Amino acid sequence: MKVKKLDINGFVEQEWGNSNFIAPCIFHAFADVEVDEKKQRVMFIFMCVPVSPGNSRLIWIFPRKFGVWIDQIVPRWMFHIGVNLVLDSDLYLLHVEERKIMEIGATNWQKACFLPTKSDATVVGFRRWFNKYAGGEIDWKGKYSGALPPSPPREQLMDRYWSHVVNCKSCNSAYEGLKALEVMLQIMSVVLIGIIAVTKQKIMSMVAKTTMVSMAIICFAASKWLAHFIYKNFHYHGYNH
Image (cartoon, rainbow, N blue to C red):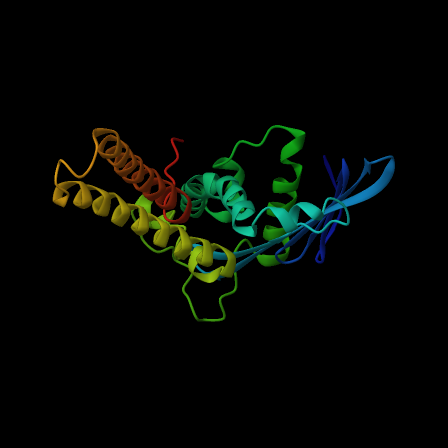
């Protein structure tokens, strides 16, 4: 990777395909790939907008003209789970890194980071642009002093529900539906055990009783698995960094 044409408007990075940093907060990349013996263009647009010290709003778009049929089959929230796994895995590291750079000074960022490879060119290019044209800091127009807030607990920092799910129609609908299913499985498990308890032994055969007990256990186990799935994908996913 190599950064070219760095000026106040951003810079161009060219190696595989073509990437552009459009100042102050847009990264745009595209590449032409062969799909079914035809040249197709894959694009990626990534916007990271600072909203307060230590907090940014992330917006990304992945437009394409091929393979769109999969969007009609796989629910959008499933794609979001996969993307959030990638984005969230870096969140804690970025949080720590931001504080290290703040301690040493934004203009001396290279003393806090070790970026020796060509694949780091875009990061280096952004830091060069940030220091040269933004003075190494964000102009908050007097709304904030620029000081970073105290580090919250890890669970709060990486909470996915309030940062994404509650604001996403697809993920929020899936969350509500899965929570309802979890409750239904729990109720079904209790109802099945209740039926067995109140039914006289002579009325229900041993086979029927065993079947209902098995179904109750399966429903209970499924509800527990679903509760874990919901928490891990819609609330908090811990990473071992």
